Length: 121
Image 1 (cartoon, rainbow, N blue to C red):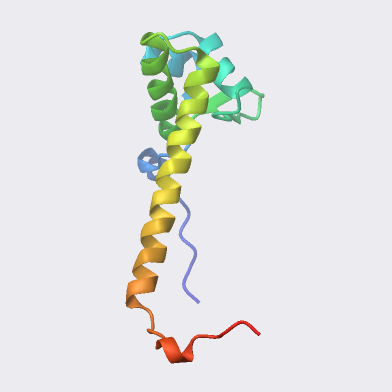
Image 2 (cartoon, helix red, strand yellow):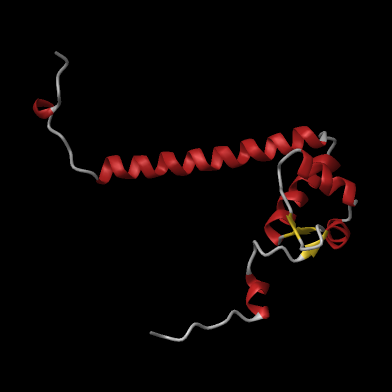
């Protein structure tokens, strides 16, 4: 059995999901306020992880989402509406991915001759 290699602290630097940023640092990076980030949490768009002390921690992935919301808000969209727009955009991308997958399965799968199709009784 191979010895287990302990993760190094630097390993998490490339992880987009690693909760590396405090609410203050995240707000500063986005040039917004901690209240804005809390509003995104209340809207359930992003859920920050909590440190052992209970402080919010954000990942780079979550900051990209927050930055997109910030762009929409800066254009005059309400926070709640911007969150809904992002959710719908994400759902659209997923639906398109599934459609492509099903389309590929249909064209790559075995073809059924018309005489082999089941007929209603």
